[in-house]
Image (tube, rainbow, N blue to C red; front, side, top):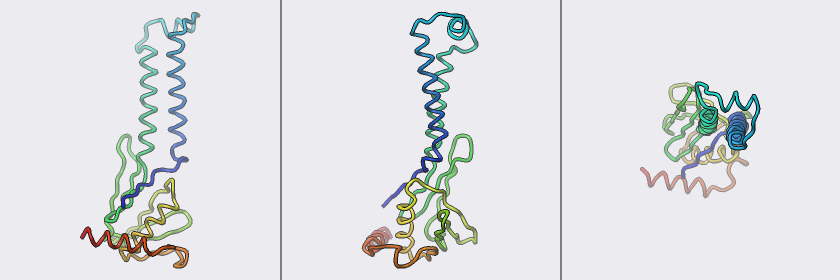
Length: 177
């Protein structure tokens, strides 16, 4: 039972737009080079020697755009029977990863803007918004209830329809230990 919930599309829009523009620019550069156009702007940008060739510049821009999409997709939350992990990109290259074992979590709070975890050291950590937020909250609720962690912000009646899912997680947890 390992579930990963990636970033919402709204968080990836800027990198996807950049990738579209960069790939369009690269296609334009290659199209101009092999189309046989002539003119002063063509001579200046594609024939004369510069510090870097236009094709090299286009390839670097396309590569950086693909890296931006990859970087944006590194965000998300993973829920496992033994821990919760969330990743967010704060630096230039590598994501910040925070992993909390269920024993470190004192309480799971559901509220209108998302989910927060009250930790054993009296800190609160707000989990980022994910693409399938409803499924994420349900998965988190199932594992928290199976672990006996208090949950706030969810009504008992409409929290979980089937108790078999909790029993299944509880059996999986007892098998691991």
